[in-house]
Length: 416
Image (cartoon, rainbow, N blue to C red; front, side, top):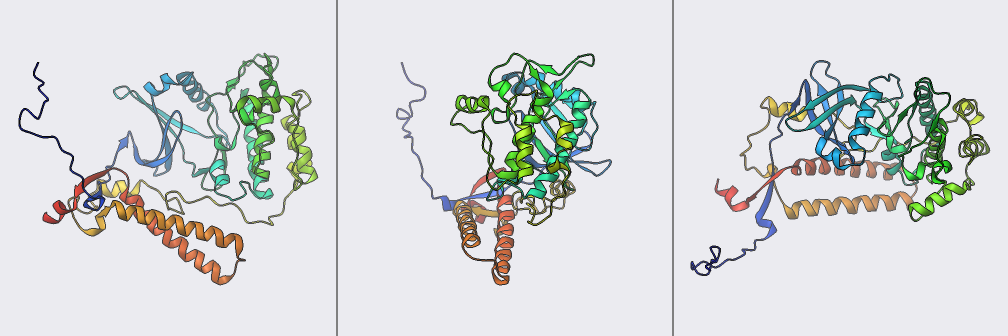
């Protein structure tokens, strides 16, 4: 039987033409302005297991907000995905506190099978700040400020009969003015208003922040004390840069958590050590309650600011994390240059991208080595600031190169 795809019979020989990467260039596409209702879409802020989070601008109030984009098809593949989202929406719509993330609006697109959750804008999260520091921790006074806001938010949730069940640094966000926001109530549980106690039977939180009663597989446990435990682990982490319990796998981790034995680092002062021991007590009925935490000496102490604060790190080269919607608005109103312009400022080869990336990594490595070995001096600080500004400009240019690109041959561009 003749093969219709046999090119040799037709006198055609298949071939692969190899070209140099220098003959291929990238050109950034024109920024397309997208709307979701009254909101203008901006750049991506983050991405999780449930969906993406992007910055948006409210065209009526001109306020920055954030949208969580969820695909129903993806939620169906996640165990309890749709139920967790519906639970979070229901809970957030009834909450209003300065330390709890606020949900403004929920929109649906049945054609695309997408959900859009409009939240208040948060510029960063505690986990991102911790990861940006060499010691992976905050100064004590800064950790104390975040912890006090966390306890205030938890007190409000518990007063509404809500158990969060997943308190951890990655679920604690920060606004531009440093206000902490408790987020991600997907696994939270609302107690019955006529319940005589706070006993719970299920938990879906992160393993490293689970209490011994869950690690040991108890059928029921006090729900409020679960949040106290995870808050204690969070405080331990942001104040020391370590975790009270660690294991090579989840089984060894739960084994250590179930034993409830941990060590307080030597650099931790007595008051903080006593608070951590009370919040991480193995017996949930002997563990500190939220009022006991709020009346503890370390909680009410005014800590001196004897160390510089950990600042919000740059996002894709933008140290100020400026509004990303503006470039899309400029494109929408025709302020961008012509898309078919073949000037050198719009085209970059693969070699250019690789060289820029390697040079930036080398400079960052040298800066880290210099900061560790040499003491800070006016000349060193000035050089570091100059290098930082140069890296920032290069990073911003590189971000404009990336995104969605169209590949063209350099020769074709020159002919046009």
